[in-house]
Length: 320
Image (tube, rainbow, N blue to C red; front, side, top):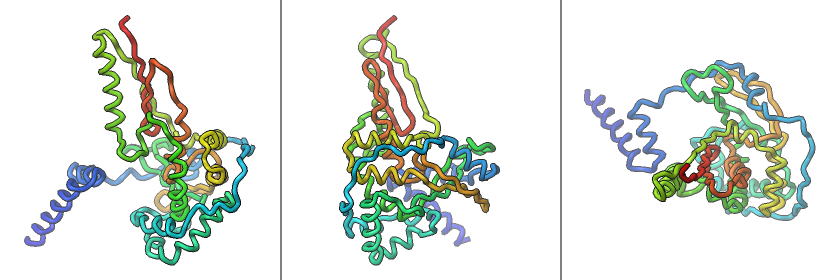
């Protein structure tokens, strides 16, 4: 009986501790109390069918955009930068197709920082991404309890941890060029609360001017937003932002001729080559998507508010 009481007290203490920590831990604790941490629905769809479905936006266009001239001797990264990136890896994250875990890389950070620094700089200087770094295992996650068709499963890409380390080093150089004040996702100290507060504030201010004023709201959820990014147009937008030429060329290499396969339970599909979109699960994908839709603006009397691929357009109207 004592062991049971002790286990119950320990469980209650652990759940309570989550509410004293950050927001992510608080949500985890709430899900535990509400018994929402249930096993997801198993994937009953054929893995090859899923892989073809996830690559459905692929086109036959094999043309290469006009890429800017790059520097062969840039050497943007230092050993200390790589070492710090390795030391801050989340060991709970899954490994990619290369099976090199974050725990292994973090443990051997002292030994790996120098050779990886050389590899990363060589990759950026040659604007070439090794093939293994462009592979992904797609894990289909059910969107609901009754997932039976391909569209009912969200594709999450497991990519090599080493590639993610390089993405983390490159990410600030791209993110610093994004000045979109209407995008509230993927930013520090910004959340859905801020987006909702701005929307409600704009609506109430307009109605306060006259009780007969009204506001139209159009809510948009772009389907498969990351998967539909056109690489050529993305490169053009990066160039317009005066992003470093090596990074532009490297990003094009990173997003083209990627190999993906779907893994579900003990089943694995055949590989498919894709050159369209940004894989969900890559470090750079949210940043590149934000840059891609940054020029999606509207003139007065409209306001556009974005949170990732969720968008609302407000139109402020006078009385009839």
